[in-house]
Amino acid sequence: MSEDANLMEKIVSLCKRRGFVFPSSEIYGGFAAVYDFGPLGVELENNIKQAWWKTMVHDREDVVGLDSAIFMLPKVWEASGHVSGFSDPLTECKKCHSRHRVDHMLEAVGVFADEKMNQEEVQKIFDENLDKLECPKCKAKDFTPVRKFNLLVQSNLGNFTGDWTKEPVYLRGETCQGIYVNYKNVLDSMHVKVPFGIAQIGKAFRNEITARQFIFRTREFEQMEMQYFVHPDDAMKYYDQWKERRMQFYVDLGIKPENLQWHKHENLVFYAKEAYDIEYNYPFGWKELEGVHARGDYDLTQHAEHSKQKLEYMDQEKNEKYVPHVVETSAGVARTLLAVLCEAYNEEEVEGDTRVVLKLHPKLAPYKIAVLPLSKKDELIEPAREILLGLKKIYNVDFDITQSIGKRYRRQDEIGTPYCITVDFDSLEDKAVTVRDRDTMKQERIAISDLETYFAEKLS
Image 1 (tube, rainbow, N blue to C red):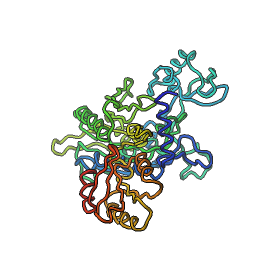
Image 2: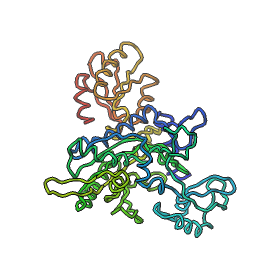
Image 3: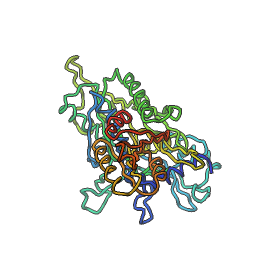
Image 4: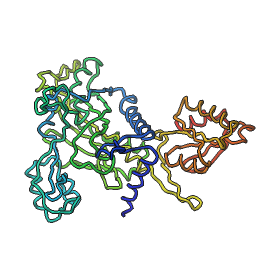
């Protein structure tokens, strides 16, 4: 087993063992490509979303938030092109009848098939490389012709006919369409001026053919998207600015710059001016973490045409009317969470033992502090709980009394808790506690009365 594959196995195991991520419906055998986030996973997930929201909305004067519905009128998806063009290339193994994404099969043998290629182009590349390809499941080399498989997930919401082919409703395949159809509402209600952005965090659904790589590619996922509306002449200026900001966001989360890179889209859709992906070096290779795209005026123009509503912007000062161009930033919550875990995972030799430690950025750590009374005796439990209740007003704090203090330290290291407070019998006399740093393992004695100030400085 390669070192990278081994690392991925360790992270998957850690996620299950320590309550970060569970397979969905596991007691029934699991549901492929769907995952549940456990008690620590949901805290990490929420911290990532809060960091994104603060950076994208609260720290800016020109971006507002939105939470649009998962269900929208089917006409929205017709206008956006998803009904006719939101698809992946599929082939089926004639021996075991398993279905596979053709572009993934080609990627495995070092051949590139862009998602913007039509069915005939992909088929040609597939035929040219048939001698290199085999079924990932049974190793056979006999496949059906390539066909396009639409990724939209259909629902029977409001359909009482029993026939899903009549007026199908879809779970949204991306969150940005909810932003576009609310562009005019935001413009009229918030009195924003171009340039301005609308940000949203929400669930999206895709009927993936072969979901893989743990939580990297799933059928139900959460997106963090922002659409920035600009004057057509200024589109590329703002595009470059957002590229710089979005790369910096991941560095600020504690990801090393050498594990991040830009990947330029060579085969653009017809309306796009430019598109780049921020890629992270996952254990399974360089993969997309976030897309930053200059989309032109295609989205608003399409919805204006199909809805018969005017979606122009009127610049009163310049007496100029135009359809804004869009700069999009689109990131996945689970992909970010996985990148953060990969970056933070460390194994260290300490006094002959292996210490597993998640060196998470403090603002992302599920628990900021753990309070650990040295003994289960009431005389230590009571003052330890007083410290817990005081700090809980400010931070998410764990309280752990199970097993030896050494094992509790290791357990907190493994879930990424930056600081542990040990309340011992000396604390009853000197009114101080021992604070241990996760990364350095250094310990210092801090007065209980100074803890709030101490952590305000350490966790700011």
